[in-house]
Amino acid sequence: MRIRISQPLINKDEFLEYLNNILSNNEFSYGKYLELLEMEFKKYVGVRYSLATSSGTSALLAAFASLDLKPGDKFIVPSFTFIASASSGVFLGYIPIFADIDEETYNIRVDEVKEKLEEDDKIRAIVVVHLYGLPADIGKIVKIAKEYGVYIIEDCAQALGAEYHNRKVGTFGDVAIFSFYPTKIITTGEGGMLVTNNEDIYLKAKAFINHGRADNSYLHKSLGLNFRMSNLNAALGVVQIKELDKIIEKRRIIARIYNENLKDLVIVPKEPNYMRHVYNIYTIRVKSTVRDRLISYLINKGIEAKIYYPIPLHMQPVFKKYSYNKRLKYVEKICKEVLSIPIHPAMNEEEIHYVIDSIKKFFGYES
Image 1 (tube, rainbow, N blue to C red):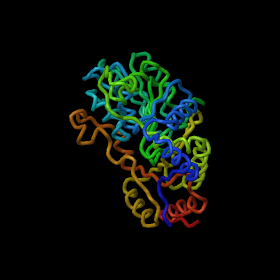
Image 2: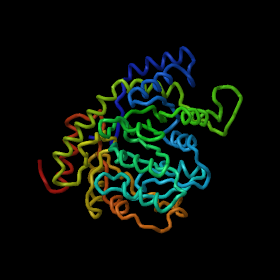
Image 3: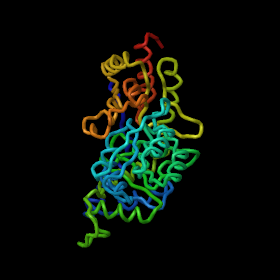
């Protein structure tokens, strides 16, 4: 038996129908599926504007580029996240200020956000990452951001459908991004989405991903790149967005089964009662002395297990000049203890319990 850590659930017949339609109409770049994906996405999240991009990273670049920031301005970003959360801003000349995380949620610590804003008046933005599918404490961060007059970029790459006080993530900040990489809630192969309620931000981002032009003319009013999503990629997303709530509910069901069966052996994910976790990644914690052995054991059993993320951003060589040799207590502890196990809507009951039984056997418990 081989169980992947992630696997998209796609109606292949419907996608092939869309593919044939694209081939017949020669609509590879622009087309109705791109328009439909953007329309359905903004309706689902609950925002005025949505912009499909070539990746979650290009959506982040567009998000930074759409704000009134100048080279040398600083932004706060959690150190425990994928590198794009920080590198996108650095590419555009902004300086990252790495923050520690909450030990239970793995998301950015609210008190650190306020402390850093008090210490440095050059900070102009906060990247709030909703890691693994669990919202950060975005409500409190919004209040702090308003107090200090800074922008919020929500990095919802792993959190499509997640909710904070019954409101979907991506609707709290000035601008938000999502990812459609194959390991995400839904996929377009490669792709992303930028959303906002601000028309000026939307228009700037739209120009940025299309070579700095407002339409397909040859008038370029600003610098930009080609970060557009193709109609072909969008068709794959349209197939899945129809089933989005079912996909998320299946993930939540698997997570509940995992939680109930593993809670006495490992630290399982937390879900505050005012949040809705979508479990894009199901991450447990064990002692650092045990983790590598457990990963090897699971892999030998045919169960894919990975570490998201083994090296904090403030310790990455590429960011050395921004780190100031400062220790981040919780990040450095947690990155040595986390490991992620399979969770996706294609998993069946046998596979779910095979994962559970394998972990139990590793710790010396027979089912």
